[in-house]
Each structure stands twice: as structure tokens, then as C-alpha cells.
Image (cartoon, rainbow over all chains, first blue to last red; front, side, top):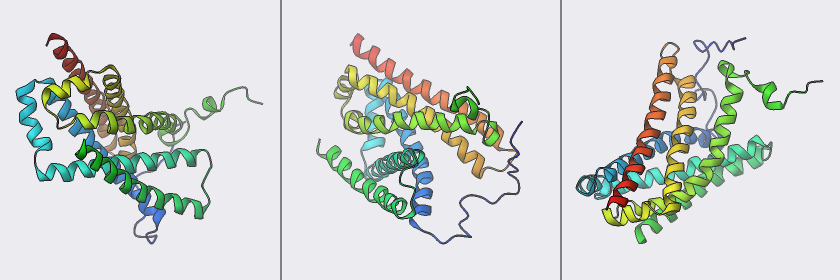
Length: 132
Length: 128
């Protein structure tokens, strides 16, 4: 039996016009935004790999685009933050799948933890990558 | 009393009669990604932006090469399943099915592209 999902009439998730913003809503929305950010990162990594596979001259030309100017630093920092946020949010989801941390108070703390943790992780990773 | 496993009893249920399998596929790839993202950030990302010879030498080290390959496979697999969710939630009915087919094919294409690039870099390093 196929499921009757009736997608034509149901409201779009996550009902921004109904509920006031709170940390669980914001952290959930950020999971989707950082998922899209990670998609950009995936495409950039593929670009980098293909440029390297094409040989030294092609790699040098594309490397200047990928790493050699101010906007690339901003984009890569965004990708690194998106990766950290999406990973920590995913780990939170795996924890919730085990029915752990579902109490409202704990869930809100987890929401703040992934926001703060992702910023710290992204800054530390970026600094380490710039140093080494 | 049912002798079926929990997984078998859940199979075929949920959204589009595939929700239970989708949940498991995303869960398994999430466990892989949680490990591979950290390894990628600390083993492969430092190679990005380096000159060509240093990049090839670093990327073709056995451990790094395996990490990069697994990262490509796992990322495109995870992407393929989660992009379905985006289509279900945000794309109007009528466009969603075709979109899901296109993104599924794109997922396989990106995976093949990444693995092709890695193998080509490895062969180039062996030839010199």
C-alpha cells in the first residue's frame, strides 16, 4: 500500500509563520542551510581533485581561483563551518535516535552546544590550516 | 508473535513507502560521515592550496588516499539521500519525481568523477 502524503495541500515545513523562533527551530533550519553549504564544499573539493588530475599547469591555474584570493578564504571558512555544524547536528540526531537528550531543557542545551561548538571548531580548523 | 526483525517489519513503511529504508541509509552514512569529515579536515584539507608536487605526494599516501576515496563515496551517497528530503519538503508535486531522478544520477556522477580524479592522480604519480 502506498502512503497518501497529500503533498499538494500541507503547509511547508517548518511553519515559520506559525511558531516564534527558538533555538531548536533555528538549529534545525541551520542543519538544512549547512547541508546546502556542504554541497557547495563537495563541489569545490571535486573541482580541486579534477584540477589536480588534469596536471600541474591546469592545477596551478585553478588553484589560484580556489585558494588565491580574499573571497576564497571567506568561502572556505563558510564551508568548514558548514561541515562542522552539519556534522555536530548529525551527531545530535544520532543521539536523539537512541531516545537520549529529548527532554526540552537538554535538547535546548544541545542546540546551543552545536552552534557554539561549530564556531569554535571552524575557527580552530581554519587557524590550523593557515598555520600549517 | 512475529519472528521478523524490527528492520524487516519497518521496511516498506513511511513516506513514499520508503521512509524506513531512507532513515537507515541516512543513519549509516551519518556514522561514516561523522568519522570521515574529521579525518578529511585534518588529513586532506591541509593539502589543499599546496603546490602540485606536495599535493600529489600527500594525496597518494595510502592512508590519505583511502580517506579521500571513502570521503568521496560517503559524501555523494549521503548527499543523494538528503537531497531527496529537500525535494519532498520544498519542491511542488509534479516536479519532485523528475528532480529526484536527476539528483540521484548526479550523485552517482559526482561519485564517479571524484574516484576517477583520485585514480588518475595515483596513476600520474606512479608514472612520474
